[in-house]
Length: 312
Length: 288
Image (tube, rainbow over all chains, first blue to last red; front, side, top):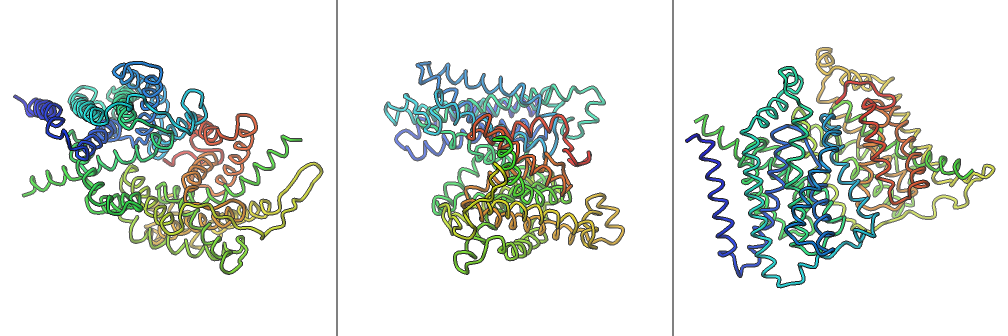
């Protein structure tokens, strides 16, 4: 069997075991359950960012926009009595449907222009959400009724759904990287002009990557909304939802399949260990982590380990 | 007549935006990095003006002479010893790096000064000037004039002084400038220092009119970016034009669409601009 096949099966088996086992092992440990749910949601965002930011090489800051959109679509639908499963699917669809025209437009830009245009998407959605208060509750936010039940049941439920979503997103990343699409994205990252020269339809492939990346992000927002039970625009459209996944992928290794997993785990561990002790400086702490990371370990943990192994 | 007043208000606001955008545009054009910390640097300038007024009674427009050199020094050191180490990295890395710097600076200011809004009061006459039916608040007029004045000062510095010519040379062609004996690292440090100094100056001018809080920084960054793209990258005069235009667009947007959608109006204008004329109104194509 090829090494790719083994890796894919390993991800599926370990992921499946984690989805089945962790909720049982962690039952009665609300703190650890919260931690693993946070990790899974961050992993979903990191692995989906990696499709655009890592495989394609476009520095997107739009993750938070799709996360927020997904959260609001699911919350509004659930408030209208729609089943949660349907709400998750609708959130993913909404993300993809928004990503198609937006991606087609902003992916024509490159470098800084693309980065900031993608950042603007979240700002615009946040302002529109705040303004359209009849539907969204405006700045007052929305409460999701599902949270009214037993907190323990809800926590276990959120844990299982987010874990499953994380495993699926990592597998999606692997499937893309190993497909013709992934090969095209590789070409685009290395030299887009040359890629066009050998017949890669860059505009179409980039847009596909952008759409595929937006769907898990939006579903993650929907899971988050159901888990937390209350959302408002400043929370779910926070730029941190765009930046934390990038930092996690930079920690683990950009453009690799397992980089997001390693990076998200390290990130959540650091966030808990270090910043719990200095809550008032948590954002500044993240800043220190970013600056140190980029100065000391610019390639991320996984590639640094690999290159050390090959050198020795 | 109401329309004329709204446009006038926009121009007064735009004068301040021009000062904010000029430094941001210079750094982007010369170093090819977007300084996400620019908004927080503006707020830092505002705090310099606020505390100089609070404890020494200094007029915020004069605090420019304090905040400018202070932030220039900070920017020079930051660039020379920190940012220089990632300057050649891809866009993603430099963006996330300056984002990290912004988090540190902003969080430090919140820790030291809290997020409360602070306002300088009683410095300027509160009775506005009248020209026919048009009203002109004295503080806004002075601050806008100072903002445009300082931006023009930067423009002439770049085009007349020796160091300024070296900065322009590095912007045009780094390698050739290096061959001519220009020390690029020093030019980078000076440019970043000038960028932060402009932010500090803009902060002082803003503090003369608006309340100061670290919470403003994201909005200021947004302004600098949009004004910079509107005017065209790498041109100080372009940034001035972009700032004035953005001020007018925001004021008209507030009138016709509603003040709560100000950022969206500016963002939509920006996106249209990026798609149709990415080099800006006065800029040249080629910078990315």
